View (cartoon, rainbow, N blue to C red):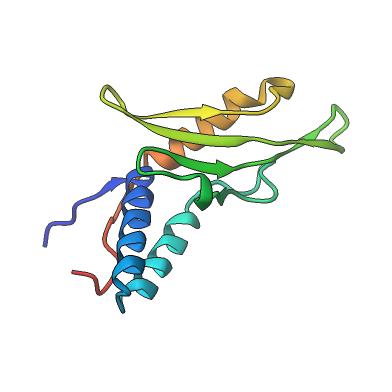
Length: 135
């Protein structure tokens, strides 16, 4: 059996679109796709400063944009937590690279470079795009 993978960002976008179609059609498959979306979202960065995890902001997502909330818990030079910075991670399509990641919010301690690296690694990993029982 041949397994096809797609980048995590594409699987999330595809699953969101499928969920919207299921809602419109009042499909009995809706719970399957919602469960699959939860599994995909569990693959997003959490910990190592992203102490509140990563949340999908479904109300801000569109067919050509994913938006995630990813607040960062900063530490000072003594290893003590000393505040948060609030960030949105915005993913949009690109003909050249597949997707572009943009990080909003304050660039405290050059955190945006770190967040970009962390989210690029997570969002470009290959995943199974099909939930169990959907094929």
